[in-house]
Image 1: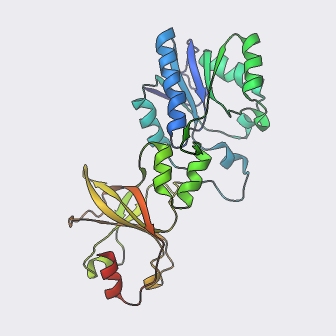
Image 2: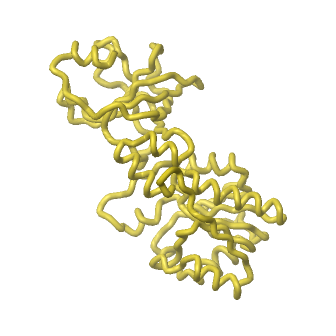
Image 3: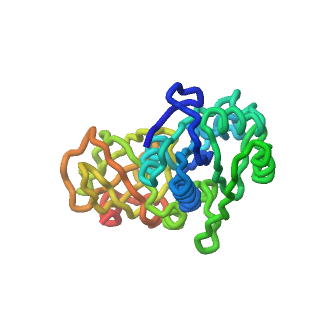
Length: 298
C-alpha cells in the first residue's frame, strides 16, 4: 500500500480511483464492510482504491468540547490494518481550519476529483463532510450526477442490538466494557507502550508488574479497574492481569497502567509491550494490607 501525506503531496496523481473518506478510528466491523466494498469494487472495475483519512480527528481541531477526544487507534495502527485489507493508497491528511472551511462542493471538486481522480465513492450511511458537515449522502448523490461519479452507500452493521460506530465503541471502552467493544471492533482492544520503572511494590508482593509508559498520550485507556487480558513482548504473548488506576491501597496520585504477565519473570525494562483487554473483572479496591492485596492478586 502506498502512503502519501497531505492533499498537495507531489506524489499524488489524479488516476481513476474508488475513494472513501473518514477518520476510521478503530477500523471496526462497520468500517471493514465499507473498506472491503471499496477494495472489491476497485478491483472489479480496474480502479485504484484510495482511503482519505485524517491524522487528527476533526472534532479535536474544531474544539467541539473543552477536552480532546481520545482515539482508539494511532495513525500507524490504522495504516497497518488498511494495508492488510488490500487498500492501494492511503492519503493521510492533517485536518485544519482551512480544510474545515471548504464547502462540500469544493471538497469533492478540488480534493476528491481534482487531486485523487475519484470515479466511485463508497460511504457509510451517516457520512457527513464539508463546512459545518453540510454535505450528506443526499447532497453527495446530487453532486455525483453533475460531476460524473458514482456513489455507493453502505448500510449500518449491527452486532446484537448495537449499531457499530466509533462513538459507541469509544463509550464502551470508557465505561470499561472491553468485552462488548471487542464484539464491535472484531478484535481485542489494545494499548502499547514502553516498560518503565515503577515503585517495585509488585516484586515485593511476589507479583511483579510491567508498568507501561504510554507511547501515544491521545490513546483511549479503558476505565479504571482490573482486567483479564494478554501481554505481548519480544514477539511472544502471555496471559496477563492488568490494573488501571491510582493503586488506592497505597494512596497513589499517579495514574498507571500495569500488567502482571502470568508465568513470566524476565527483565523487560525499556522494551515495547502491547496489552490486549479480554474482560473487566472489577473496579479498583482498597485493601487493608499488602498481604490481603497479594492474596487477591493470586
